[in-house]
Image (cartoon, rainbow, N blue to C red; front, top):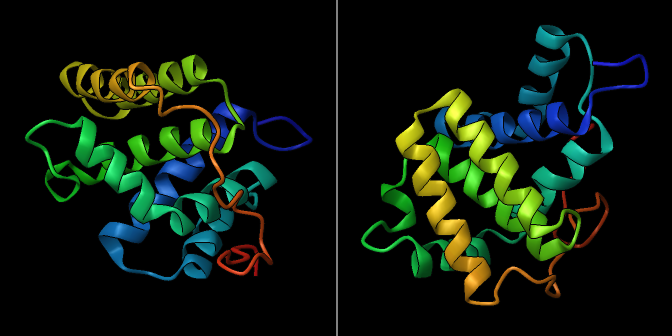
Length: 156
């Protein structure tokens, strides 16, 4: 972390962990953000907030893409960590905030770091299928900014 805040890689990791924790703990976002402040000593940066809100508001669309490209693996059968990583990468591509190749590389890197090489290959295959199908281009998705009609300001 720099004095100005976390790097994009750190912000992406924070977003994945917040998404994962919302799923497995059922805690509210405010509680999780407070935990991040206490544990890591800083509040999530704007990218983290935007990404978490964006994934949460486009969850149905992202899960439909997962279902279409994770053959024989409906989203509810994908492990929560990998599902969180996939959702974030899909949102980044679809919202146009990260080039598809970078989103895939970062998703695979996170998966291999916090899960297994096999899970990394799975994530790579799913995201590669989305790109090959032409579904990685920016779409008309909620950009996740707090204050939007579907967004939640996770800083409060």
